[in-house]
Length: 334
Ligand SMILES: NC(=O)c1ccc[n+]([C@@H]2O[C@H](COP(=O)([O-])OP(=O)(O)OC[C@H]3O[C@@H](n4cnc5c(N)ncnc54)[C@H](OP(=O)(O)O)[C@@H]3O)[C@@H](O)[C@H]2O)c1
Image (cartoon, rainbow, N blue to C red; front, side, top):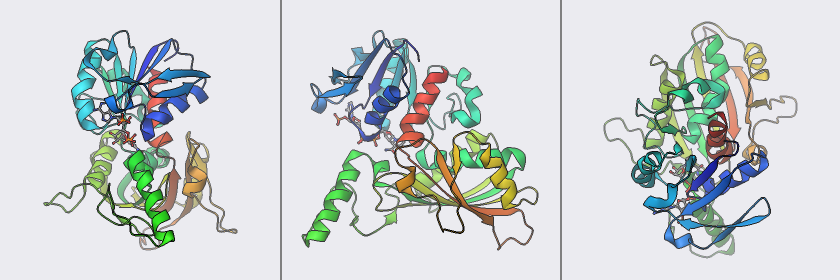
């Protein structure tokens, strides 16, 4: 990524703004940075390293001279413009789900499968944010003692649904506290002081929603292991930023919480927050604004008498490690 011409597609969005921040904070020297969004944002400005950059409209010609294009403007934009960017000579790192299950497209979490980056044919997919939050701490365990069954329940923040959903949580909460009525605009459920099943479509054959299916499929693809049995329940909670995940997993052999702690202490991208005495464990508040996945509540699953199962609770800033930071890490490795 050093000294390259970089474009951000969706630069005004929740993830897009974090791309700019990640590049700036990591001190990556670029040849140029181009900010692209819809015509609604053309002419808006954003600061980058003390310089005011003007947002441009995304067009077919926007990728001339671009080496790396970071996409986060939704699936339909990726489907339409990623091939155009590749044709113009750019490598695309895409945040949407469009290419994730395409067998020709690497799906990469650098701490797990950075080696897959070199297989790219122009596009590299960034995994689902709940999947990244779950898999970064699970990988070192899986490598040591293969996980055979995984059950996850997510507590997903408004920011996972983009800038508009964050605004909806803030506005509906303010209205609720002021005793005013609020008509939801982004999701069909009241969001203030409420939670609801993830606002993606339900597969009528299985009953799983789209987010849950992504976690299931992406776990198998990233771990390159079709034998892991996965079930997920994805829930949107009234937290502004950072996802949390409760997971229980069964390994091939018996495993202790101390073994898990030992593995996670050495794991890149993981920080243990597991203070039993003070009842202090991972929280979205602590996960926000930093790049590690926080892991705690590491304990034996007492419902499995074989001693092969562990339960734990993790939290990560899904706008950073779940999206922009993971994509920038991929771009750095390019
Ligand atoms: N939020 C997350 O935690 C997260 C995590 C992983 C992946 N993702 C994926 O990242 C993508 C963006 O998510 P987000 O949360 O950042 O959404 P967002 O806050 O709604 O931002 C969407 C961005 O896309 C741009 N856009 C929309 N229509 C466009 C068009 N026709 N042409 C060019 N740009 C257009 C918007 O520009 P305007 O401001 O001009 O409308 C804005 O910059 C989605 O595919 C999402 O699934 C998000």
